[in-house]
Image (cartoon, rainbow, N blue to C red; front, side, top):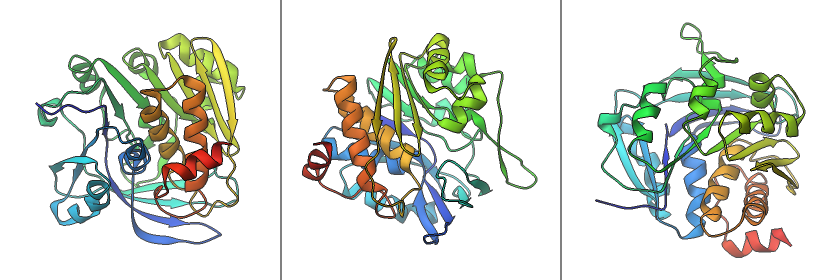
Length: 291
């Protein structure tokens, strides 16, 4: 049985991005794509489990070339997303899902071992509560991006609505590390105070809670709080900010403490945001940005 330090599960997508500083069409995206490429710089054993149409499998080449093992579950169509940034505020955007690769089921998950698996869905159309319960029976620790449940797809229009959900506490009880952005945090907890929001999520069962926003990252770990500011000089590569931050954090956290991992993740994501696409820099670049 193959063993990995960190495994990302979720759809690798094809995205159309509309933004004032530049638009792009047909680019790879998704939490496993951005997150795993950020994590790969750690030289840990990283894997991705994703669902995608066979005709789009070439999109996974960059992951494989970066040393990430990819377990591709063939499906009828690849998830397509359309992201519209209407203002300069990175936290404000319209998102549409125009195609959907479908839900994951426990029977299709390959027999691999890892101390931590990160559930990085883009919408509520990837993981069910029952799937998470079954996966928890196989994996020591789980991490989850709360966009999995906040981003709810209108099946008729494809528009993604950001809404609260009653399953938030049950799902959080199954995981150890939680990632949200500032919008999702307010929707789920009812407060825009990051410390209060993180404390609420911690009360649901999360031992490490990360909240990203346009200027930086707030982190709460067992009652202690930290904040690290992004240092990017532009936002040309704003798409994938949160997934990149989380992927870098989870990988660096394997051998480092919470604050060191937060600084590393924010530095790496700051570099990534200055260029469209995933992080493609060097480890020395990140260390230099951390100073």
